[in-house]
Length: 183
Image 1 (cartoon, rainbow, N blue to C red):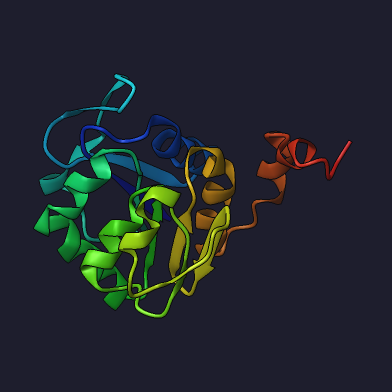
Image 2: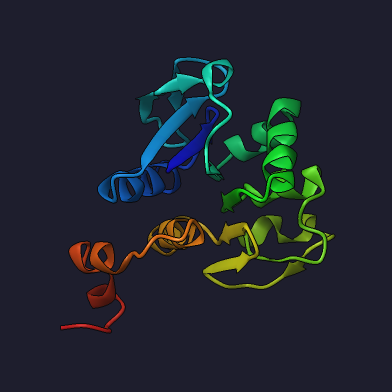
């Protein structure tokens, strides 16, 4: 099982590192893909070394994840990203986007009639989708998340969309306790 997190400068740090951390805790290979460079800098100036550059990325990932933040606009404007999103949808693989990143899915034309969520300030751009203001939405192989506060829920939804049982991870991270569902 492999996940690729596609990153450009301006990514939202919590959203990117949340899925990377949760996936790796479940022994899922999760690579940060630097779309333009070996290093990417987040919207809050955290600089991270990518595991791979975009051109080094294999074709055998089970999911791609698009973090939000201002970098989502650069993802949307990169035809390589639009092409890979379409390719993954055509192959019925998991495509996930959080915060502002669902705008990439809109441009790729893959969310028509799908239930999606996003950061509220970009919801008006998701014209072809059935937008729902919620923490996370999963519709088929598309997973979307609302924003930084949705990081844990989004990561769990991505892993579950891949058919993984997140029960032990939820317990280990005290996620259910946070929600008041456990003591």
